[in-house]
Image (tube, rainbow, N blue to C red; front, side):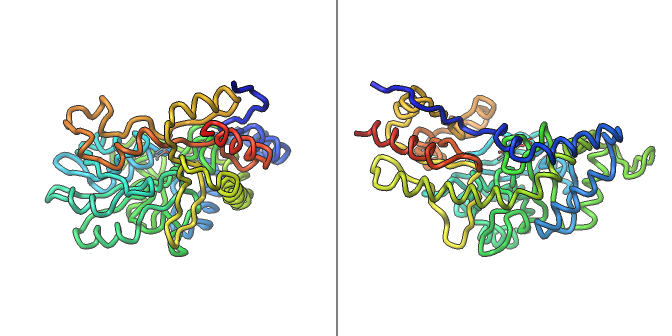
Length: 372
Ligand SMILES: *Cc1c(COP(=O)(O)O)cnc(C)c1O
């Protein structure tokens, strides 16, 4: 019989807010005081700050991480008749934007051991219609982006890195998000760098692409009423920029705390044969947006943990090609054997910078108890 002795939330955004409350309240009050809501200097300040920390030339703040990918695809001229390759296990943003741009999403399987796109399967999926690859640095662990860039260069393809979960992750000392022609970020509240509402960003070193993206996200205009094209309304607003700017001052410390708790989990969970801990690719620095394990009898474990007050989440319960939204592609489990095999095993444990050793020990002890 399991007894709930402690409550461990999956994440705790309130704990983070309380740790910076004074600074945050002042920054938000300042925006309201100045009614600096849309197209105000605080947005440029955040964009410059983030671009500098990410070693990128341009940052374009947009309304969310989904729009960020869509805008880049459109401004690269990808559309009707084109194919774009992305990964079978991701959030649907990575693929739905391909369809929205008018192109066809083509899925590649994940690599065994990691949760990121398999470069060998990318090669198999390339056709004369392929124009771009969207790798996702899922969970905060870098995809094999050096190999992906080599494949893209050989075939003349664009690479757009979906960095929604990977702020400040690196591979061989280079920041994820600085390899491709552009990278896209989500600042959704629960992401490693999260706003207090929807927000997103695009990074690129390409001056012309940056200008086009900025224009497209603002009704096709850089200057009010000078519309060089039709665009959309997808802007980062002043309140979210102010929140993000405050958090930029803390993000590296929070990232270190994530890495610290990941180590603590690894120690506490050592020797449990029924689970696999998240692997880290040689040369990679993982920023642990998620602490995702693979577990035998995953559903049973999840129910058991839930009864003990431990909240877990599955990222994601159904690989994208198996969703009803993509039934028209006619895929079966054999098409994506690794994603299909991991589907029933993956489980994301409670994870956030403000957690403590007591929570880690309680989660680990509960998992041990379940398998005993
Ligand atoms: C969160 C997320 C997005 C989308 O970001 P939004 O800001 O919610 O639109 C895209 N891709 C991945 C992998 C994500 O996790």
